[in-house]
Amino acid sequence: VLSDEQVERALVITAHPDDVDFGAAGTVAGWTAAGIAVSYCICTDGDAGGFDPDVPRDRIPAIRRNEQVAAAAELGVTDVVFLGYPDGDLEVTQDLRRDISREIRRVRPQRVLTQFPQRNFHRIGASHPDHMAAGEATLRAVYPDARNPFAHPTLLADEGLLDWKVEEVWLMGGEEAGHAVDITDRFAAKQKALLSHASQLSGAPAELEARLREWNGATAREAGLPEGRLAEAFQVMEIPF
Image (cartoon, rainbow, N blue to C red; front, top):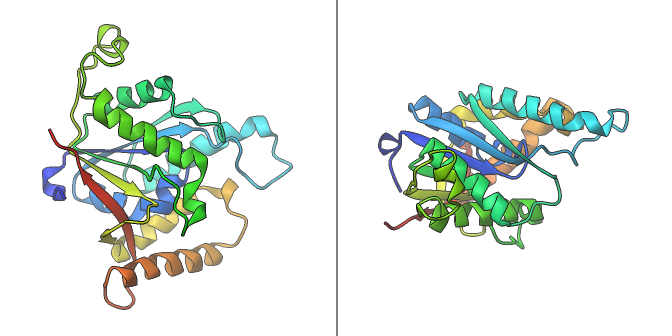
């Protein structure tokens, strides 16, 4: 695992607005506090989400984009790109691989964080089909697409984006998440980020806090952290050169 001192830029790639905040907001807050420039690439606008039947569905994409931008700002992230694919219909296509490769070449991150590309039978909620598609497309973009100057040739020919080799990938939502990050001191920032997603929250803020403390407390205990600590966990993959 690279130390934060070895990382200048990190790119987070998820399927929906709010995915990063549920899975990794405390970790991202730690990265930005350490001086890492973090960028987001969100594959869909989350247009199939929300609870309020009185909100016209054609307003949801803009609402969710604005919520994600506000949530990112709570964590010190200002570079947020939306790819605009339909929510609930994300597939591992050449177009998606190209679009993610574009962001990798543009940002040039040492570290990429994305979603686990396989079904987690212990946590079905982490295995939304869009999550798995985003994770698989990202892994294909990391290797071989973004590092291959001859893949997706329009990226170089039309946009001048040179190939780039990512050094490591962090996967969230998987069964082998053996790298725990203590987020106890960043928990308030995680809460603020998630509260920015008002259209997705049907309960009171206290209910969200209790749920997060339960989830992140269990993760910390599984990682052997002291009682009362909170954590997020990831599977970290080194990408060989």
